[in-house]
Amino acid sequence: MESFYRTHQYLVTNIYSPVRRQLMDEIDWSHRLIGIKGSRGVGKTSFLLQYASERFGTNPECLYINFNNLYFSNHSLLEFAQEFCERGGKTLLIDQTFKYENWSAELRQCYEACPELHIVFSASSVMRLLDENTDIQDIVAVYNLRGFSFREYVNLKTGLELPSYPLNELLKNQDKIANQILAKVNPLEYFGRYLEHGYYPFFLENRIFSENLLKTMNMMMEVDILFIKQIELKYLAKIRKLLYLIMHAAPAPANVSQLAIEIQTSRATVMNYIKYLKDARLLNTLYSEGDTYPKKPKVLYAHNTNLLHVVLQQGVDREVERKTFLYNTLHAQHKVNIGKHGSDFCLDGSLNIKYDSQSQYRHSSKTWFAVDTLSVDHKHEIPLWLLGFLY
Image 1 (cartoon, rainbow, N blue to C red):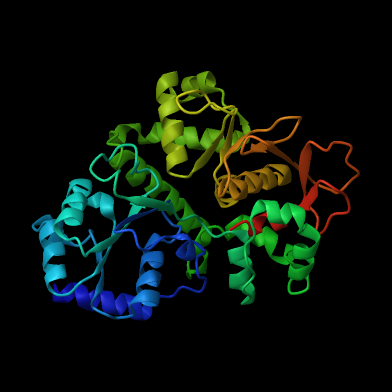
Image 2 (cartoon, rainbow, N blue to C red):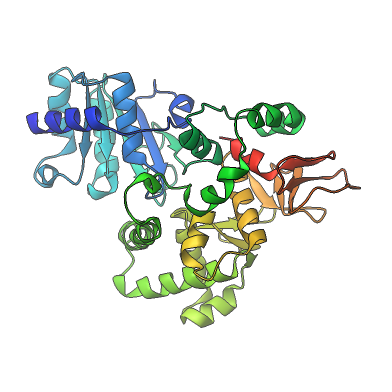
């Protein structure tokens, strides 16, 4: 136990978190069991340690543990939690949860055996905490940690503390909000760099970003998909090829039959693989309103623009890049479906939005246009970059 405390103190003392994630203030920390889901590379470990640093410092009432530790190959989580509580522990932060064989059942046991204990655990985005884990689905509060928003990236690069805004406020007061931001920074100086390498926090590391992201993408497929979903290793090549083909075509209609031919498998298997790639947050799927998996999606997108820049070595088409960003940023707070009235996306069943490269007079009042300019001149338009301030 003492070695865990020493590791915790070292990590909390040396945590480097240059940007405070907005999710920190959105979580109801009074819940006794909290799951933080997120794709590999978005900073789940840093988030747990940042919480520990802010709320507890080196106070031994809080302890961070990682199931990579071989200690848990011969000791149960329950006995560890009980000893921690006997020592006065109140909050247990658990990382790499999927590496512990009976994690959900023992989290339930800890919840019931230690009524004063709060547990916060990280989870892969592939793990279905509410759908598949009946042990905890009635007691866990689940939150999603996403990659950096454009706002968080700008704040990191400039040292500013620009706030986020809900979409209805952006649409209603966009002139005022945009002018407040433009008085402090020109966002277009940072927008291109964000689209290329700003979504994943590890761009801060002193390593080649593209190689790091490629390594992360492969870990998503090898661990987050194959290991967690218990798929045989021999199918990895098909999943990798499927992702490559979709990335080069996206955004494009989901031609499942053709994809099945190209990777030499069944349509049903392709649909399952697409679902796994979406859960790993390598892809986004766009459905008609009311439809969902296992139905075929209407359009397939890359999950974020950083992935496009790494995979498409010949360069990324500007319109593809912008539409991918638009879907990704809208998806953080809204349900996104295929657009109506010629738009790209329909939000929450009512608001239609379409990307356009330039500002121009609009005859339609049924669609908002996300315009690739610093500012806009007409109604029903909003600067594309400003939608990066939704979270």
